[in-house]
Length: 117
Image (tube, rainbow, N blue to C red; front, side, top):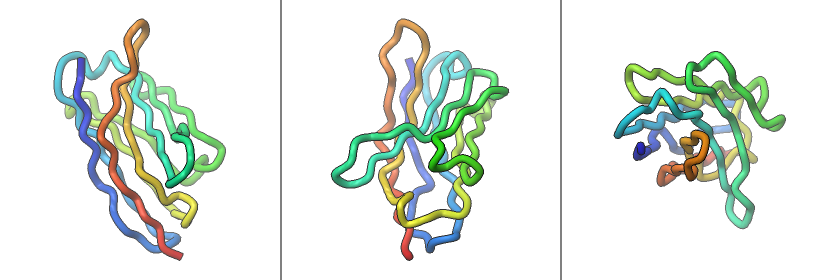
């Protein structure tokens, strides 16, 4: 089982960019599908992006498609979320998650992203 720690959040102006990182410790990082979610105040947690174990298959929520890019480096046990053209509505706590069949989803502690208008 892995443990996840997100970093890279912060305050940015609309139109700016941030890159989030999620570092995993523990065994078998490359066996996990990795995902990013976000949760704005008073809202449910929502899916943002997913990447398969090898990194050759990705998927995105419609709200971020074309602006965000998920990637991973299995040698570094890290998954990334490059966020460009940020909008105020992207403001949220961003969480990474690790999943594999027949196992509960593993969550990080989250990192705050605030986009000012």
